[in-house]
Amino acid sequence: MLSRESRAPAFVSTFVTILLLVQLCGCAGIELSRYYKQGIVVTAAPVATQVGEKIFAAGGNAFDVAVAVGFALAVVHPEAGNICGGGFALIRDGHSGLIEALDFRETAPAGSSEKMYLDNDDQVRPDASTTCALAAGVPGTVAGLYELWQRHGSLPWEQLVTPAAQLADTGFLVDDYLAASISGHRESLTQFESTAELFRPGGKTPSVGGRLVLSDLASTLYAIAGEGPDGFYRGTVADKIVSCMQEHGGLISHEDLEGYESVWRTPIAFRFDSLTVYSMPPPSSGGICIGQILSLLQPYDFTTMSPQSVEYIHLFAEAARLSFADRSEHLGDPDFYDVPAGLLAPHYLARRAALIDNDQATPSQQVSAGAAISSESDQTTHYSICDSAGNMVAITYTLNAAYGCKLVVQGAGFLLNNEMDDFSIKPGHPNRYGLIGGEANKIEPGKRMLSSMSPTLVLKDGQPFMVLGSPGGSKIITVVAQAIVNFTRFHLSLSETAAEARFHHQWLPDVLYLEEGRFGINTIQGLIARGHNIKERNAYSDLQAVYIAEDGLMTGASDPRGRGSVWGF
Ligand code: DON
Image 1: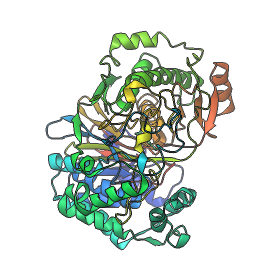
Image 2 (image 1 turned 135 degrees about the horizontal axis):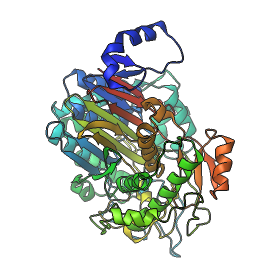
Image 3 (image 1 turned 30 degrees about the vertical axis):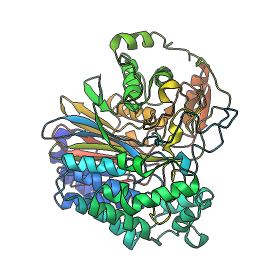
């Protein structure tokens, strides 16, 4: 393990000793990044990072670690880590250099229909798409992690799932983050008995330092360890999911579970300065929107700007406004809807760029009354892994809201997602992230709901450069785009990049969201003077990022807003 202050790779070995001494001396005020040679894992939960460490130590590659961490997060980061949700992986195979996207997004059950969340008067039934079993899509995580392992893993499957099963079986220590999260959601987590029993045993939030044992989840994980996806999509676990649906009015059937398949897709790739960025294609909007935003910013000279300057925030917000308008109209599951091919074409982007006024905000065309971004906390989680063979893995997966639809499958120990809310449940009706949509993202049986999740890989001269991603709903797109700009254009260190203040615009509502308490009054006034409608909102990102220097040394940073950790060797 190596340490250094800046990210100038050529000096690493020279200064290692000095910097180690500085570190040992405990000198304050210097930010030290640690650089690793063999492998690195950055996750939102330290115990999951430790599982990654164990798999690396057993000789696993980045893909093995990704699978094991995915299952471990389902135990120790239950608000977002999951086996009954879905997600995306962006990966690079170090041997072939091939970059691929794995889509294990949930699908709409066969029994779903376009108006399933509307009443007889075509009004949206409150909470129907977010709470309880009807909100759940057919889960993809187990199938996705298995597919990743089959194609790229090197250690036995069982060895990768067992650490998570053991954590659930023997219990793990509750840290202050988890205790606060459960406590913060205590009302919604007590709506259903099966959920309350698990997370609030004896009617109390587990105390910090106490041990949380999840026996039913352990049995489910042992079944998956022993039988692979069949241990989840067939047999007793599947029976329990279907019984839960019958009891609570959900739609997922045995046929839905048995028929679920993950899909390999071609990543969205675009140039930004000297870099090539790869991110998730539809059914995520992430790759296209990040590509549009960065491409629209590309021609601007940033030398007189900074991450919090009015000029930069204005230009970024205008680019995001244009991109989210496209998202709403054009993006959906490509297996069901013809997503236009030219959304990143230079001539199209040139036309869009011409709509940006460098000095004044262009008001969004339509404003939906009350279309505010939900203030309830949301959760998704991202993790980034890299090894010395050049394998890169970025995975973002989710239950959608924190703790999904809040319903634990009785006897199986895991939460159901509420991903159906990511469909456009009625044209123009905002989902929980304030996003609206229409035809492209309407509900259809078997279809995948549009996502903003953006696991992203960045390469420089064909070599690994960055692995990154974050939760945040619609804000994932702006978090990832800002992180790339902050690191590469504003030359922040990786940890500064993780910590830097966030802002967000998504076309509708026509609001420029600024992270609460992070922007000075001059910036705020400058943006108002340019015509922006400003609202401050609480912190929302949990960026997990890796940077790979030219000499192959790797460093990581976990967003200080979360409790994540970095480990490498
Ligand atoms: O797929 C999506 O875009 C959302 N379901 C992601 C949800 C999310 O990021 C919540 N976390 N903060």
